Length: 281
Image (cartoon, rainbow, N blue to C red; front, side):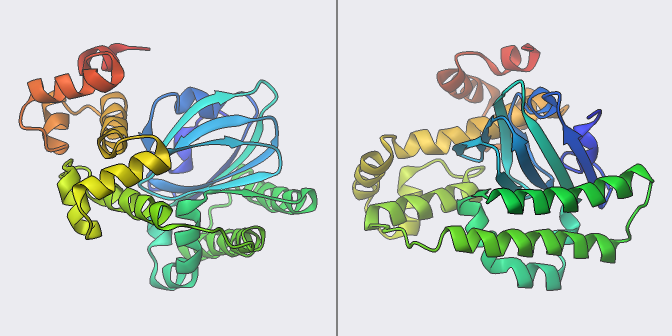
């Protein structure tokens, strides 16, 4: 695959693109965190791929299909030498269409929590065949209009939705602590660019800061501050590597009072200054 950037994941106005990755290109492009601007489906036919999607780490394996939604941070840590991925991407504007959004709303909430869906081998082959059709459309320069591209996206989403619901039929026994952590992460994703206070998130959850801190540590082994910092640092790393924003502009975009405070915060969690990270390979 020559240009994963063409998938509409970074900056493009294309409605649809499809590629096959047999050379580790996902790892080469996403070896540092980047924010996905398109909607991406990854079908793994063989091998393995270690990936972080927002705050969670996953291992993509054979017979897995992955749904990555717009505005999600993605970081590929490793691809095995035999990894073979089919990739289909869509412009995020297609997902925001009223009919498409309403018809997939319930599925989107599921995929945010569990983006990796295991498939039976026969279903993997079915998705592979469909992705092959999309690949051939691209190869002959057949450019679908927005209506057709939206229909293609809807077909994939509904197909994965039904499978996703089937494989998640056994109801997970979430306790109160799990639910607090789940809601906390949702709030952090929404507010991290402006708020890093434990008290702020405790107020949103209508519990005391001490109760929030104790619960999060018990469930995850991490502090609330660590979880907030993970997303703040991921965003900063993405901006340092994939934009021309100055370090000061990045600091302000993440609501740091000045570049010095941002630099100390960044180094505390990464071991290097923002400038060193930007210049690293």
